Length: 272
Image 1 (cartoon, rainbow, N blue to C red):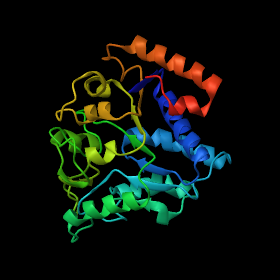
Image 2: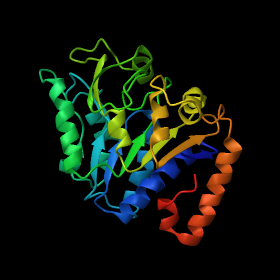
Image 3: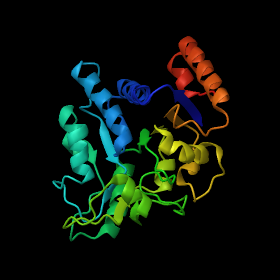
Image 4: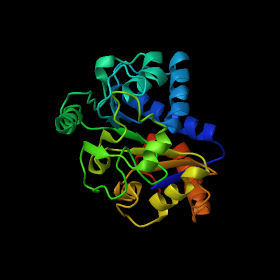
């Protein structure tokens, strides 16, 4: 697991964006796994800026979002579909037909959505890079503590802490804050590369458990220790409970030096 500790939340967003930009420049039809929430918004702004400056095109990129609430429509402002349009899709040249979200509006059977979503990912050739945030309880996607580490896309009951963190209005008519469709941990582990971003001291405990704790369903993000190509990018606050920060910074310096010498091959063969 590569751990990159940077000085600020803005630096985290820019670093993450450059990883995605580099991938898309290398493969214009890259398949990206995208996330919602507060953390990715700054990264999306960096991607929009790069597009507006003519540095990158998303015309052939395919995307799969991690999750969506059950019983919420596309046009509902609280939906992740609306979030993605508002924060990214409407500002870039992505083909809307290439964007996928595990939608389950009111009246549809949520238990069919998971299998169909898994098939769509498979037909796209799998996900090249999965962007993740992390919850204060260690969840990734909506895989709450005690989720199976082999789980696939499915319906999940949300933890109270997650509902609170997302500041979702549970009393709004037609919205179920208690249920969501989410990619499973096993689905995430099948992706070719994972990029997890976290900022602020509120995420410090979860980052410590995910990176340096035991692999356990009590911290779903700890399952990422089993993935061969994971990059965790954090600011100083989110890194404040890590024990091996000096080592992570040393590895990052060595990786940068090797990449300067050998180029993309060094990225594909990391030193962590």
